[in-house]
Amino acid sequence: MIEIDQLSKHYRTADGRVTEVLKAINLQVPQANITAVVGPSGAGKSTLAKCISLLEQPSAGSIRVNGSDLSRLNGEALRRARRSIGTVFQSSALLQRKSAWENIALPLRYLGVVERDISARVGELLESVGLSHKAKAYPDQLSGGQRQRIGIARALALKPSVLLADEATSGLDPEATVAVLDLLKKLRDDYKLAIVLITHEMDAVRQAADAVAEIRDGQIVQYGVVKQLLAQPDSSLGQRLFPLVAQPGVAELILQLSYRTDVPVISDWISRLSVQFNLRIDLLGAHVEQVNGIQAGRLQVGIHFHQERVPLARLLAQLEQFGLVASVSGCVHQLREAV
Image (cartoon, rainbow, N blue to C red):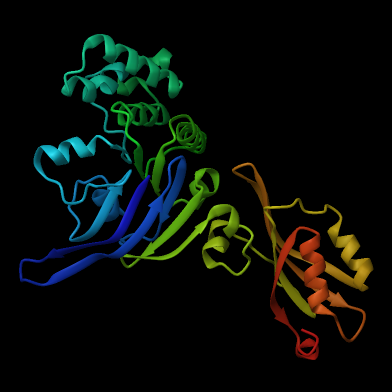
């Protein structure tokens, strides 16, 4: 696992001013887990990635991999420590004059691994990324997604316990993006990797991440487990992770609903609720899909009542029994007492 504790990074400009880029970052990525880091341009994602990969030394704080603090090492000790962290870049960064097989073998050859062991390891990795048939192909003979998968295989050559994927799907077409994200999930499970996925694509977070942290102005402002965020209608990160475009409508009560992740949603909940409470339910907007094997949904509904007072607490409790978490996002003044 990787543990980032109070990590800060600042730079001193030529005129002596200090620019603080990262501010006391705390983040843990357990073994066999994919944690995404999202945020706008300039938020500090790239600097965080450089610190995690030890290309930049932090100004303060620590980076521990499996309990060992790597953030204060230098020289040969730092070079050895880097082997525990594999890095996949936005571009695959393959050497154009070397085949896929030779690109994967590079870090092993650099360390003087014997040829027999190199062949075994490269063969294993090519099979893991599904490209054994492309071993002799050169980068310009591979698609963008295939190049990225070879880059991932090379990052795993030295058997790291942490994999940093820095915008690894940026610029790929949708099919290649799905293939790379599926591969990351497979490698997470097969090799029990702690994977840090730096991305600006919420689709990538939904498809692959177990948890997500949002960084803004050098600080982590929100963090959550993805399947929990999906069931939190009031979470701003959850709303952006699982966006809902609702249509405007007129109703006495507007509810924001999210599917619970621990129980299935009752399919006929709308008709049941309508009959039970003598009301009409209008669906104003919805977003439902499978996320990492979980049926997830976010909805906005407008409710019209046929009675003056409404036992709202009981209505919300009944929705929860049906597998939905609800919050009130609007109501007319006549019903405020009931709410």
